[in-house]
Length: 157
Image (cartoon, rainbow, N blue to C red):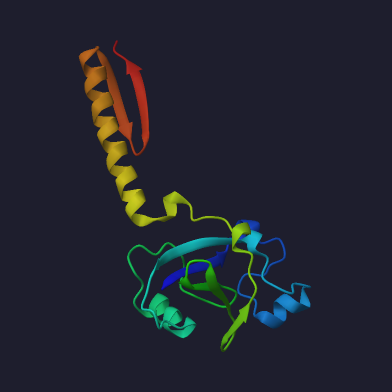
C-alpha cells in the first residue's frame, strides 16, 4: 500500500492550524483540512494491511532515513492508497484518527532539498563542480576560494 504523509507548512499557516486538533479546526471555520497549507513530506510503500495507527507508530519510533518531516502529530494527514485512485485520508487528532476528505491536488509537493538522499547527491555534485571549477581556474591563472556552496573567483595579482 502506498502511504503519503502531509504536514502543515508553517510558512503557509495563516490561521495557526498547525498542531490544532479537529475541534480547533472546526472552531476556526475549517470543515476539512485546507490542503493548500499542507506539504507532502513522505511517500512510500508499507504493508497492505497498514492502518493510520501503524503509520503513526513507525514515524514516531522507527523513523525511516528518507523521511523529511517531523514526528507525526496532531493536524497531520495520512493518505492510504490501496489501489490507484482509491485513497483514504486520515486526520491525526488528539487521541484517534478522523477519516475525512482532503484535496491532495492542492497540497504542495515535497521540496527536493527536504529529501535527504537527494540533498546528499546535490552536495556531491556541488563539491565535484567546485573541484572542477577550481582546476579550470588554476589552469587559467585565477585562484579560487570555495567555501560551503559559494565559489569566489579572485584574479591573480
